[in-house]
Image 1 (tube, helix red, strand yellow):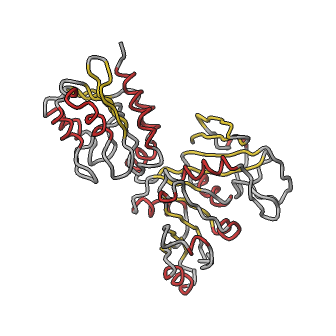
Image 2 (cartoon, helix red, strand yellow):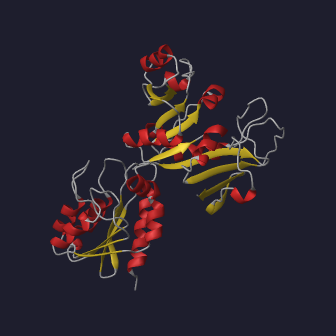
Image 3 (cartoon, rainbow, N blue to C red):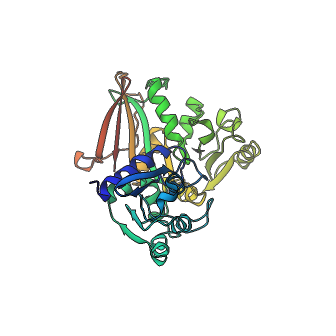
Length: 357
């Protein structure tokens, strides 16, 4: 006979299907079980749409009465873009709710469970906690620290270069790897690059699907981003934020604003300061795409949570060719940053290394 853990595993497998469509909401799956058999299941499919519990209970119909509902996150009990899930659960006649973990959002945390208990529904939680937290790591970090979850991403050759000595970088990685980056962009709410990357590559920084393109942030202390660049030209369609300092020309910042960019002025540009500003905009997760100095700053300030590195089987060579993490670096190997829980995957000829700090 299947256990609570087995059904929670199923909710996690369902939840991941919403990746790239529901963020900044958490990934949630739900399963309705009656007499040991699944009679309804579902997952949160798109931001602003019905929650996982709604789909699962709809499928279960009248069979939900007296059944057990499994979810990987505590059901919500407040009005947001949709009504409280707890109201629907109570109305359905479910006799027990089993959740992997409590919701970290102060608007929900513990309150969803309390509402269910008051209605006479049994509640159990604490199953596959680590799996549940890892699945929604950005959501948990944001609500616990007030800062977005940060992924540092780059593509490099076997000898650790991101471009040739002339700055040519098209393309280090293959088409499949670049497609994966586009889909990853759809699951974050902001992308950060430095002005040198913007000037050299004139990147588009679009997601797949393009309607999920996040805020594009350029660290540009002197407001040098050309008005003719794609990032500026498309700013009215896809939000572009230029982060400049108080020393930047007011004329340049004004022109960027007139072109549709949002200009953020800071005394000093730090990754932490930018993340705080993005958090105020409701940004839960961020993808840093370079260049080397931006990555170096993020690591130095200990702001990186995860790395996403594509390694291409090519060799560029050259002492002046750019590397993914610039700056001074550490002085001794003992001080090198260690990547934990890393995985290695072959992406049609490129190697993808993912890990956590």
